[in-house]
Image 1: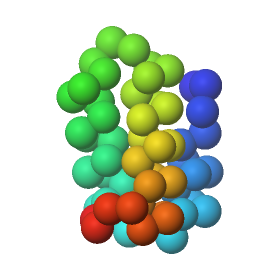
Image 2 (image 1 turned 180 degrees about the vertical axis):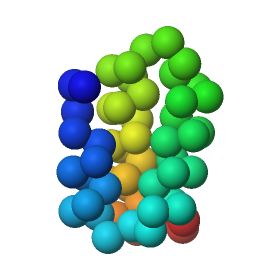
Image 3 (image 1 turned 135 degrees about the vertical axis):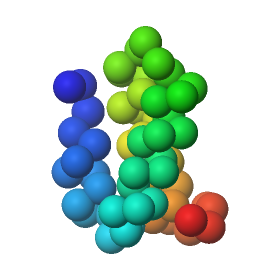
Length: 55
């Protein structure tokens, strides 16, 4: 693990279902690249936290 996506989730205030949906989507996009997967999960969490997108 390069990025701590679980810790980012805990600090985010997002629902578990939202987190699972983000992880599924990012895994589809980055099947073989763990770093890119984790990075995009973190970026999506941050974007939702900041209100850039509706969950």
